[in-house]
Length: 112
Length: 116
Image 1: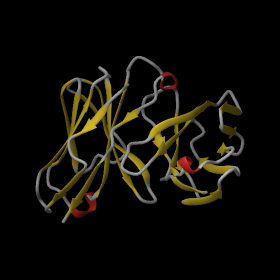
Image 2: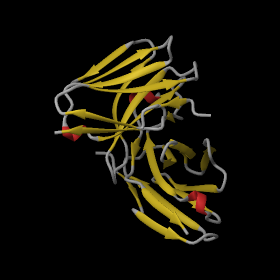
Image 3: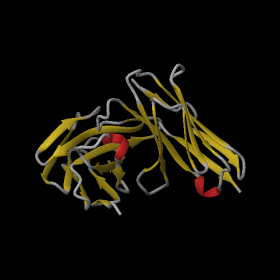
Image 4: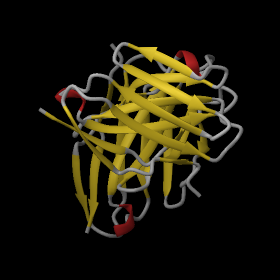
């Protein structure tokens, strides 16, 4: 049973435009959410996170929005750059426990 | 800089063979994790360890075992490899005693295992 879902396996965006990656979750106990980025032949690296007490967190070109009532979060990248082309994983955990549940991933391609 | 290394980038084994995947981290992290990554399924936790000789099952432990004899090293063992264990295996580590907010997981580059 997939508790964290990314329904778009892939996304193509023109350079300079906004990329929006979506993530849905089913476990209402999740209270902390993360995004990881993965390039081919490398391990995932942490990108940005948000606590359930917030609805938005911003870090440079990256913003994560959380809608708790809809159990939905999204990652916005503005402006998108070719170097952003990677697979993005959404992840969640509850209670500070070290175990994290990952989503299925979305492959983003930013076209120059 | 945190460094997590995995012994092999690519590995090809035969069905029934015993397979060892090694992971080493150099940041004195207490927690270590093994995941597998499959298309359409994302990253799934196989096992994790929060201390030497301590381990806990993740979401998909069947067919796998682990060993943590030293703090820096976490091994994943496939006792009798099967074709459905063909996958990308990723190791990760982080500090203990902190909630996840303060220290996210650091991943190795992965081992692509093919079982024929």
